[in-house]
Length: 83
Image (cartoon, rainbow, N blue to C red; front, side):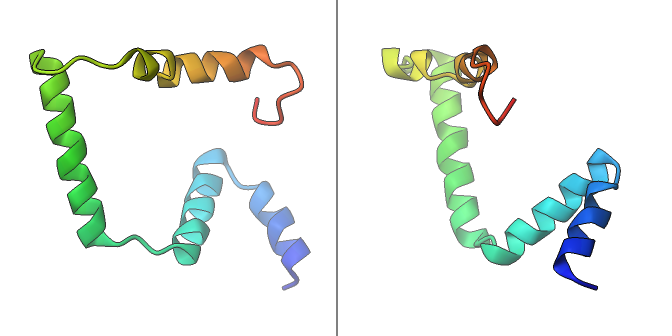
């Protein structure tokens, strides 16, 4: 099967299956490093715990660059290829 045919066939899949195919291909290009992933998970979990407890506060930059604000910015761009 040619690459072009494979892509065309993949595009006809339901969205959940396309996501699985895309995730599998990306993982093959950049395999996860479980040791590193565990370390990052521990750091992120600790930081979230500190934020929720009030031990630390989010910086103004972090608040301004929140995922919700980022997504709103993408949606407001009429020529964005991502929307």
